[in-house]
Length: 328
Image (tube, rainbow, N blue to C red; front, side, top):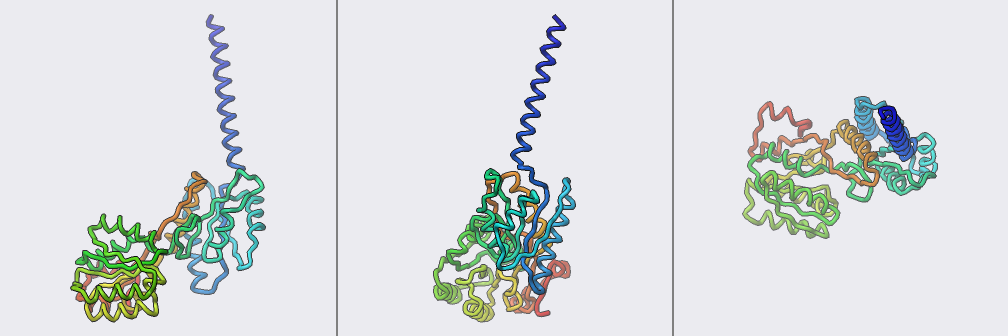
């Protein structure tokens, strides 16, 4: 009886092991024999843009080195006349399906690679785009446009009296305003939102703000928006009026702090590289998912001349948090 039971038990263990091995082999099969390596594509560029790309790549490389698995980073320079089919075929031959692209040429490549069908039709390339102020477009990536939550954190840090933020935005920035609404609620800020379809409409909105009982508790936010925050039309007008009325203006565009807004943000490129690495790794686990995020790897630039004019003073500890200050 014991002998019979032992035989049955042995057969059960053997069957279970076979099923497990079969499932494991099947899982290996669905992995399509891809390596754990990552290919990076970026355009050939002059300084300072090349230094930016190299800093992002350094962040990706460090994140890969700290990963538990051995990951090799393959860097590739792309030209404006790149051949998507050839690139995809080379990736498949090298058993690489994780791709990070940088810059405008990289984004164009990402659009095409994400739709490309490999020889193994059930396999897909996991592509993440970075180093460009992109908007949600069906391609996974991290935009260079700062997440409003981080902007509002800086606002509380640099101008703590502000309770209300006025902003005009075009349709292209609607995704950003959606993030801003939830961030403002969390941080106790009131948003005065004005959708516009032209720069003229934006100017009218801001003119009405300055003509109203605007106070030192109000601030104007200039999003990264060519229509509502035009560099040559909207910005000069707002800076002039805000200076006269002593109103806080902050911006999503890095260069605006130098031009006179109280503060703006710019990318921490090394940290951005780390975040791009994390995103492409996450996509491998959810290949059908499209991940898109505003920039969270940010640094702060403050115009101290504007701050002094507004009566804002900062301690030595606070100033140490300002990565750039103007005038220099």
